[in-house]
Image: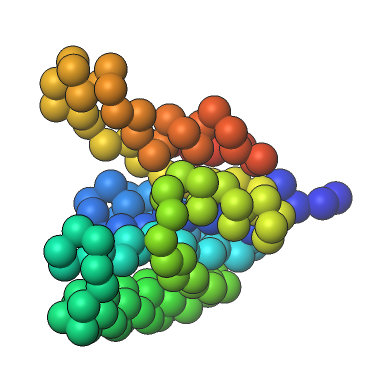
Length: 145
């Protein structure tokens, strides 16, 4: 009998929603002996809109180090639960596209994520969420909490 899920992808940005998705991934991985991969998308910001400065590069380096520290803590947490875990930081690009690209390249069996609430009706009409974009184009099943 083959495993239901061998590779679970969890987009993680440090919010309570991504924490919830991560914990659900751990419980599911414990049941199915799956491996968890954590992915965080970072956007490099330019200080003056068009130009990269030394300050913006330093800020981006700090952000990467903070995310690496978070990923290390998450890996330790999974290790305590007997779950195999890997992590990846992806730079630049539309998060939903980068997450799906990663899922397809690495043959993920499941993506676990949460939906953020949009505050206004106008916001819902004009801005598609990352989760909606992933849901429409995913190469694998998505569990939305």
